[in-house]
Length: 70
Image (cartoon, rainbow, N blue to C red; front, side, top):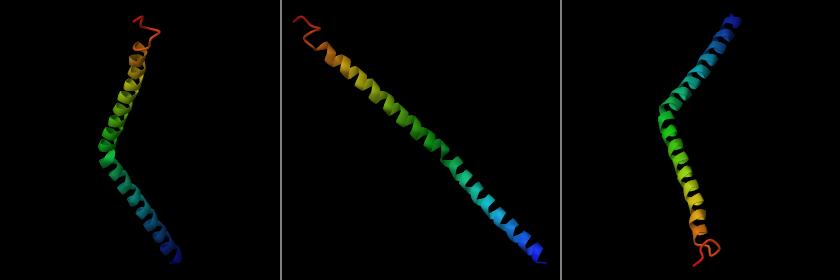
């Protein structure tokens, strides 16, 4: 009888672990669209920041005396 009880305990433990993993996967699936939107917004903000930094250098370069004879 002991072998059957041990096997049942192992099966119950395995089922519990599988259920926990399934719950975690479901939570991730629910949060995936929000995370994707956050990542897209972060990438957009970084792209805008880089564009501003690159334009800042060219804007300042136009005011340099070496470039303008005035």
